[in-house]
Length: 299
Image (tube, rainbow, N blue to C red; front, side, top):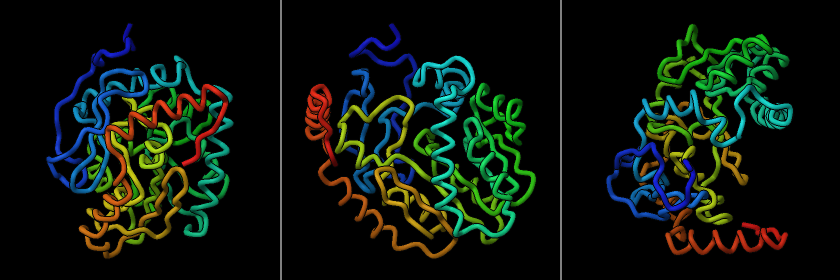
């Protein structure tokens, strides 16, 4: 009954300003998520960041991820499955190959929201001193007890950084947060002077153009594009060292002088220019119809 269509979720939040630029004006792009649950999403008028119109509190979100997230979206009540591990190992190899040209010898690396620890494991094999933290207790326990990895079971607010780091990575994590700017600045505080932050998130511009509101759901509180992710770094004095603009978006950030904020915001607005409620609704039904007949839709 918890996922009955056209009803609200039991967890409900409050209206918020844009979590990056602070603008209070936005436009609703969808009233529903992929389950046909009532979950309004809006697009910031100033920077086009997509977000839940009613954002959960940090306490609500922390409880959801520590206890319910894996069961709710991956239908598992235990540690990671063999298929999950196989997929994450493959992803970890791809990500390491992207990061490798920017690594010094024997780097100190922290994986922010490390899941079951596959990237940490691979980094250690490559010679890094790698650790991580994960709010989900089942996955954190697996990483520690089954893999013997240095993983704390906590969220970013409670993570205890014992020494300065060369790299912080966060793969498909920042779209789950309520305050990405605060989290980003916290990650910067853990870095050495020339430290890097490598963030990868779903590109919401691509996802909405492909699936419409079928790409929206409870677990993803924020939807970044190529330029709103750059904007997140810019507000913290970080600039792209390398950009991986694929279906998902990844940026390796370094400290530097960002482009003018208004310029980045303008790029982001252009990226999401044709994203509106009519388009998002129409695209969902087009994608669903093509999928029903075994056809693929390309962005």
